[in-house]
Image (cartoon, rainbow, N blue to C red):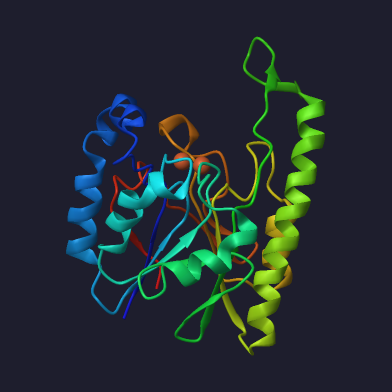
Length: 246
Ligand SMILES: [Fe+2]
Ligand SMILES: [Fe+2]
């Protein structure tokens, strides 16, 4: 048994006008890379957590082929919500879980067990600017209205994250792996409400995605920070090879 993670498939089987092929070499036929790499690495008894931005479809019927593609990958698939997953209303997670029972599991306000670990998580949120730079590229300010809005979204996501963690604690779990779609901090931060919660609950690893393109791969924490291991698993960062977490 092994646990793998990867994010940001951005599939578009039913929405070809949204194809990611235009975003450069890494994205050329990326769905073939996903299938090939998952089949080579992930066994039938392994778990694969997919950290959001699954499909470009706006409503569930437009995502059916994308979700069927994911369901056909090997192992147990656990899905997290990304900012582009319009088909997934957080409040309707239980109905998605019923509909895809035995094929896909949707992680929101709940948790899944992997050996003696609880896999917890939520989409998260980070304020991504705009930041204002001086002539030398140093940040000298930012859009304060947008930052205030971001604060509200972060608060809501923290409530959802605590629900997931508390459900695991109540069930007796003491070891946690935390999945976020957004990076845990923005480019200016070393600490955020998400890193605070991770530290409070003694989370071992924080695994996130959302960051695309070379210039964004180092937007947030990576490696061990204050005792927690942070890992970026966005698809293009991994060249669409799922990374072994445990
Ligand atoms: Fe993405
Ligand atoms: Fe995203």
